[in-house]
Amino acid sequence: MKSITYNLVLNKHIKPMNSEQLGYFLAGLIDADGHIAVTGQSITINTHSRDLCVAYYIKQAVSGNIYKYKKVNACRYTCTKNRGLAGLSKLILNKLRLPQKINQFNSRLASRLNLKLCTPSVTGIEQNHWLAGFVQGDGSFQIKIRMPRKPGWSNQVEIVPLAFGFGQRFRLN
Image 1 (cartoon, rainbow, N blue to C red):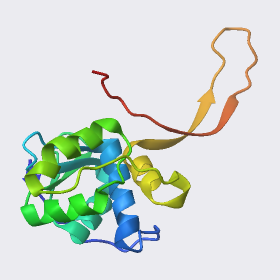
Image 2: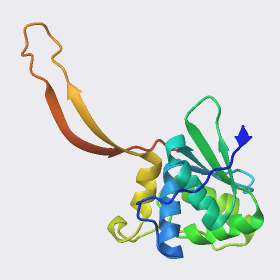
Image 3: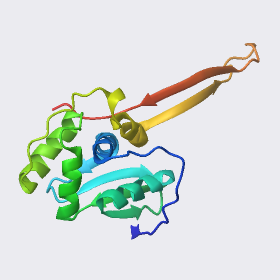
């Protein structure tokens, strides 16, 4: 993997306006596609290379490094320095929603950085930027076109309306 530089381009996306909104956005991203290392020495968020500007936005707000994978269209934001980890941890404290990520935070980061234990967020997703972060990490909008499968069926094409979806895989212990 090679460290890369990228000029942050101003775009028309609405960005979180304060640290509270940024914390919910980052918590959603970490819940969707993030990982807290077993040692508690790093937080990693993987994104598609199209979302490189998001990784740089996080780097600008918190600190960290960005790596682009050579053979796939993906990049990785990683925060490893104690100051950055502490800042990022304070931003996402009590904003995570998935039990797996809350357990990673509590067992890997909280004790290492002397933080309070994280509890699940109870605020509605319509009141903050968590869903925006989660969809950024694991969401999609799709339009599917279905063609007839059997000979003799109508030659009409069926267009399925716009669908929104996101997915998350995790193991139950």
